[in-house]
Length: 188
Image (tube, rainbow, N blue to C red):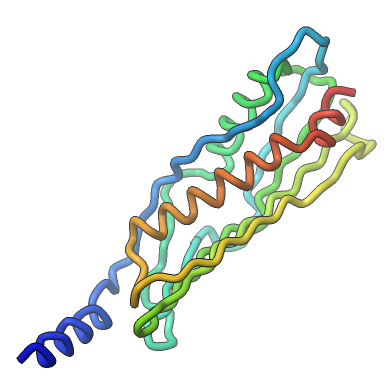
């Protein structure tokens, strides 16, 4: 009887949850650079989402993508708000001394069921270019890349997927804002 219940539970876990998932971007940005009395340059922040497909995840079940994860929020707008807030906290002021272009290149989360252990992978790439106020001379250019790999029992839950994506965005943008070379280029 116990074996029959176990088999039923396993079959149910493999057959359910084919409903698409909607996530909410909810992450903070940290930095170690604090505002000081040194005069800082002004900045014009431009953020764009260059991903071809705004879908974040395809969850595979039995080798086929069965669940899509997406958000109705505009990730570029959220990143612009978070980065601008962080730069202002560091003592920068909105203006036109430097043009900062932030481009979201990749945000992917893949999850695959497995028995007894499934796995998931989350990857993000953000490109940052700092230019002079005419937008002609590129003074700084760098890709910020981060990847997380996780294991889970059989299948990941929607809340786990959302947490993985938000944790990756938190770490990725925080790493960018802690980059002393980037901050120095904005300051000069």
